[in-house]
Amino acid sequence: MDQNKSLFKKKLAIIISIVVSLFLLTVFLLIIGMFMNNMKQQEMLKTTDKFINFKSQVEHLVFTNKTLVQGFEAYVLMNPALDESEANTYLNNLLSKNENQIRNIGVCQDTTIIWNYPKEGNTAAIGVDLAKVESQKELVLKVKNEQVPIFQGPVELVQGGTGFIIRLPIVRKDTGYWGQISIVLKGDNIIEEINAYAEAAGLNVAIFNDQNKTVPFFGSMSVVGESPLTFDVDPDFIDWKVAVSPKEGCENNQFIFWGATILAVLIAAGAGLLTFRALKTNYQLRIMSSHDSLTGLFNRHYLNEYQTMVLASAKRNNRQVGFMSMDLNHFKNINDTYGHNVGDLVLTETARVLKQSTRTNEAVFRLGGDEFLIIMPDIEDRTALQQARERLVNSFKTEFHLADYPAKIAVSIGTALFPEDGDNIDALLQIADEEMYADKKEQKMKQAENQSEQPLG
Image 1: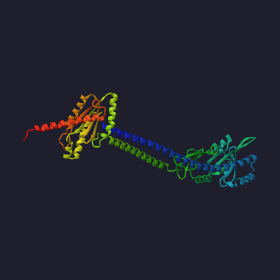
Image 2: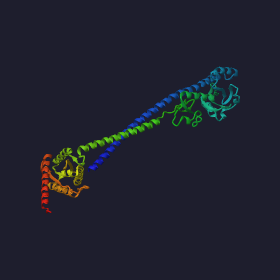
Image 3: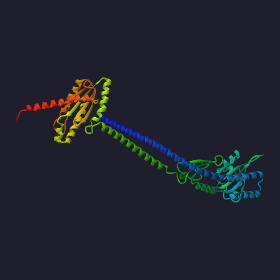
Image 4: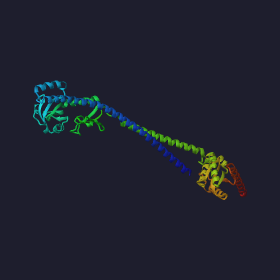
């Protein structure tokens, strides 16, 4: 029973320790998760701030040139004949500050180019119907049909090279749609500007336009990385999708996460181990306070607590309790003859026989030296108590054995019955002790008679 109880206590301590470890680990992981999420949010906010700065510069670049187109649109509406000399003078003044970005300005009647500024390098485009140019027709027709401004690019230009195009419809009050005006921005120069903005913002950037939503026209997704932030740039006009990541790279959150997780596991495991050791130590202290260190039997200290419970229960339930007081005959001679080590072995073997000879609900105590006490709750009567006494005596005759020590151990046993012999432990022990000493005296007398009857010689 004690072994099973000890095993149960050990299992319980292990379970409690595991629960403590798992609880602490869960708490730590929640804290780590919150911390990592906060770090991620902070990183996203920093990247978003950088993108806003980048976006404002890109939009300023596009809308500055759009304003120029709108100015020339107003001029064309007031001067539909397009006097070339006068128009060139107007544009020279208008575009003087932006000539490094603007390649040319063109006018389409319906969808066909009828005029370009400057002429040099752009004459090849005159007379081209853009509604028949595959790379431009969709948006050219959109401007015509929906009469809305659009931004397109980069595209392959009719006159060669690449560029970005801002198109505005020319709509007259009297006749409605007349044509459209466009400003072609130098593709390489615009890309250089965008790249400068990205560098200044500290961002890796990949930009997709509405014409190709899978392959960026600027930057590379391999540079931006696997988990970029994505934003829109003016969906109503520019209509770009932008993927960005910090140029210095994301903070090494995985290293922090795994480092913190490993530390949390170690702390939780350490706490679980400390809990197990504390429970084990507490259990051992309880065992030490209630058990004899040599034999493992209950000790005299625990007797006061145990007998109070047993006698109180017997009184409530009107039951009888048996007591057997026992000591070993000639134990002092064993210590004197063979030494205390052998004496300890005798006591240990005595405890084994007592445990083996008693039932699970019976308690065995070592009161000190070679004195032992057995308490049997709920015994039937005195006859049952005497039968138990006889079984115990026979057990020592047949079951007790000690290696390298052939002598048998004789025991003296006295009994008492609650409540017949007394209603308290002191009275019961006194009666049991008196009977035990009487038994010891009787055994000595029989031994002396046997020795006197042996023949001499």
